[in-house]
Image (cartoon, rainbow, N blue to C red; front, side, top):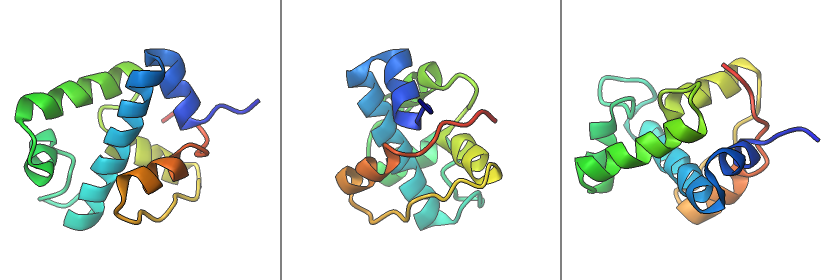
Length: 113
């Protein structure tokens, strides 16, 4: 069976943290889409993520750390997105609703950078 981004995350950090990682990925990608992918004000900076979602820097850094536990081969969700694009994986369009977008992430195939 082919692994998915969701199955790898949950296998590596458990179901509860894995769902949190997937939410972080969706939220990060939403910031990228809203601010300009990879631009000066893009979400490549975890502080920009914290500012956008109005959460503390500490919380944003903790969430990024758990992401890195799940995907040590990627520094940020931007890197994961880039790897998926490089492997010509069709990414879902984000609706802006985290719960809805989270479901669309479940079927994405896992790829290595």
